[in-house]
Length: 173
Image 1 (tube, rainbow, N blue to C red):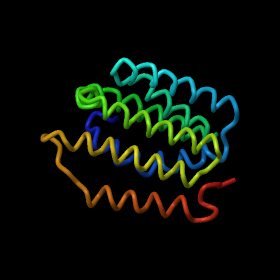
Image 2 (spheres, rainbow, N blue to C red):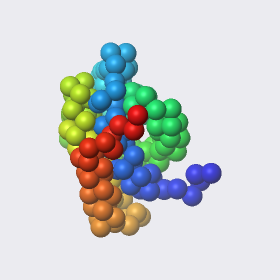
Image 3 (cartoon, rainbow, N blue to C red):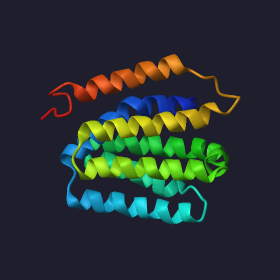
């Protein structure tokens, strides 16, 4: 049961999980996976042109990445994260929509992630995902009701970088 898990805690978990997942996706993706990611990226572009953050497209994009990792556990965990995260993101959507710069930043981040996956660059994909999640954490931490935890975030990001750079850890088969 995930009722006691905060959006901040989900984002901290994403730093490890999604950095590794996107690395696998960059290695294992196929043309159909890229088409699915492009579909959601196009939806984000259309929404951003209207000055809005498209939560459905964002969640779909991250799920498409998990599916491209070709590991059913990654897909299932991402689905569960997305389900819980949607509620928390809706609560923080004002922060994402309050500035065209924020919307443009998140769109640029998703484009960078997609490009790295498309070009089969696992380290670059992981680094881009880390930057994206750090950005989202920064938005969440602007909320005065949530405590800042930079030491925890840095520890998780450091772990994520080490995991994606060690040979053999990105492929278990």
